[in-house]
Image 1 (cartoon, helix red, strand yellow):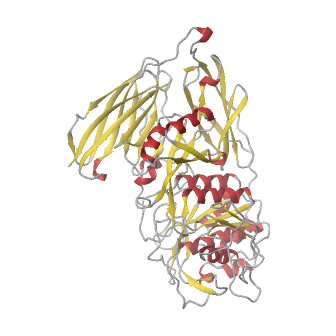
Image 2 (spheres, one colour; image 1 turned 90 degrees about the horizontal axis):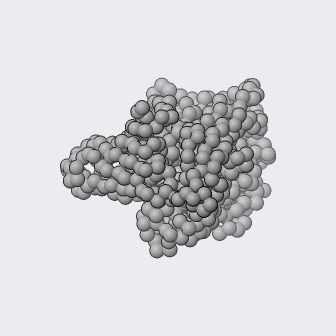
Image 3 (cartoon, helix red, strand yellow; image 1 turned 135 degrees about the vertical axis):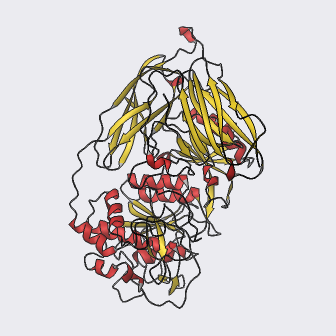
Length: 636
């Protein structure tokens, strides 16, 4: 029975199981077929609120997928750091052994994101990542990229706040000017606490770079962003912030050179949501494909908040799809049209003014600033206004209010330049005030899609689930024999259990999904049988690796565009996973079942330079044994 293909940046992988009596095909997701040039990412979401990765497909360790994104291709990175995402329920002792084998030492762990920060002692990130990827408990490996605060040069001649009328903020203020109970976090360069418009506004923040309470701004970017979002207003001084009464939680994520990294931006977001922030603004770019930052944004949403991120200032239109974890904001010029510098693409959610924005400056005065950095806090501040009058609203509802009330400009309907349109603060606040949000008492539905019921398992057991709900899923919890093992907040919901920690014999695997309203699903249960691995049982561990043979094309084949690579995989006990690598970098993977399978991968050779390229298929069996085969293809 043929399984639908998984569309990835580098191709299409399909599997035809030859021995799998209980295999089934997952429902086809048409949204996944519309963008074959996008790597699968746990934080991805479709425009309709569904998730293209909520499928019974388990990805092998995704290695440096972000490098294939045009928005991130030229970014510098920390030369000796890796961010490693592991599956919930992973065996910590086994992972530490893998880290050591990769020549890496532990810097810090973020259990909230199932992420570990490693320092690679010899600086060879590729070699370390290759070793880490062989551990079936590792989900993804990412570099820690450098990001500059997202801004363009000041406009010192701008001396008014006419842009407030573009988004109807004065009319919104007739209803609300914010609330002291809605904390707005500014993930940035800090805040100048001595500025008249920010005095008394800032809560006790944190520098996650130095791990101190020092948040005084030495760059100026964070001060401008904070003032736009929530400057003290109606006080006869300076400018009016969007959400006057919201307190500001400053979180410093930049080093002495004014650069932020993936590691510190994500860490700052986690710290903010743990310290009562409900609205989080991140004015750095390009973050639309940064897996770890988007994972942090997903955590914020699961904890009841929303993250707003600037779209970027390089003026490029990218193909990166819409993402449900955060709202990305583009910029308008003085004519209320898309600013020439504002990045565009399916990932852009809506737009707000971003040129000549009046903002507090480090010298105690004010300056005109431009950039999507300064459009994002206008939208973030409006979200704080919405929550100030309706603190009961769920994050999904607030996001929908901002998007559904946006003023449509450009092509009719959603488009890549403006997203859903231009923010309309008055309409968003009015809609929130009038909204009667239905009490959600319907529980989610959860199912276990791998392994099959009554399967015999050994080695590292991958458990894949599907969870659906009318609203947001908060988490999926794994239980083994009735005991909680781990929870996963991030789609696709996957777990890894070392069966060596289980006694031989029968075990019950259960999963329970909980939605954002606290409704819990009925448990999904399966039974697995852990094989004997020596001792009194007399059995022996499976040490026999699988066999994989590339059937086509032949080595040295000339290619120009798309080319299909086929292989046959067999194993004495049971196949678990197939992974395809191009020049040593993982590009696609999928679970396998049975003892024999024909697998294929569609590679777009037009995306690489002329010359020799290696395409490798790596097959893992249920005991963790691996085998590889490689074909050399010549790009004309």
